[in-house]
Image 1 (cartoon, each protein chain N blue to C red):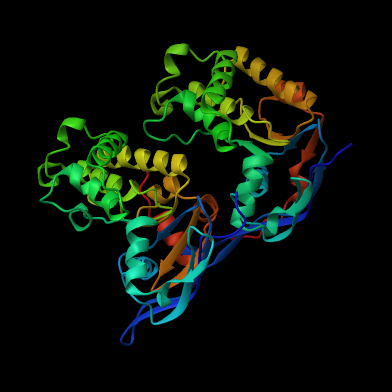
Image 2: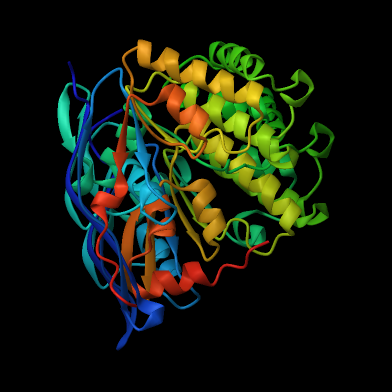
Length: 235
Length: 258
């Protein structure tokens, strides 16, 4: 089976120059791989480095050591050392990301926020909007909200816009950072269904879920992040 | 997506006597890419922008631009006439103060039309129609077309300046603090407008700003400057989420949370 994502010996620490150059180790020796059609879940207590790992995989955090090998357009790319331009291309085509919080843009409607990743991939705007509508309907976002910018939405409503935006594309790898954190039971079930559909479509998923029911419903395997603890040195 | 950059800058430096304007700046810019240059006043970001747009000649270093026919031209070896032609057609320059980029005593329509005439358009009706179209794209009512920008608010002037720059279909736009000096609500509208135009037109842009939120919203890549040097560069969200250089950490940690 295809393995579109291989992480090997990744290490990350933060150097706080404003605090006399104190170094905060985050993780070390992070090694795992994700197969196509599989959903792996990062496990471990808060502060273990789960989000940091996701952010390194998406290029939001720099990587100190190690490799992140991604299958991208019939080739292999090491994201840990890739140029910004390559990282952007990987985000457009290969790795999708559902963040914990939606970063809203003034004046852009919820519908267009959701459709945007498809438009960026060159899809027709109306076709992208049609897909966005069906996803927002599936996630039970009231139709009267679709034309409004999400800045004033409730946490759960924003989260659903965010999920729709993340799930609308057909990225072969999808990263999920607590996508169900502020959802009610009914919508959590919708997300579980969406994840199942992605798995069936052969997408490799890696997520963080604090909700145990959701985690049990979607996880094929839990990756214990405490195994990658970087030995917290007294700051 | 083409695999050739649009602009190649190598070891660009500008000295004012013994004082450093900007030093040893190197980067490539690809078509459709928005690069933010951030730093506080005096960091050299405006000097860099002025060198790149050939409003200022650097002390050393090179910058090459791929013109429309695919040829690479060295900016500082072009004749004055060639540079002016580039400025009028393939490039745009959005000044912080709209009065620097507009002609304040001719009508809004003429401000937009003038750039079209510079590229050889002569048909009055066509020029006026294009001007109307561009005014509406920057959300200025058609019935203001014969008014002078002197009678416009700051936000409207800035939008007019953007229309004037984009009407010739440039491939590269330089922006110097495009939202500086505007009210926050006006800023948001302008940013949203700029973001939409840049995406729709596939423009490459170099945006100088001291506002990290503006950089986050508009750019994919970012360079942080201090004392004339680039202290950090990379993907915009990487630089802002995981700043590595001491100065970038200071900048990011100084943002006020609302």
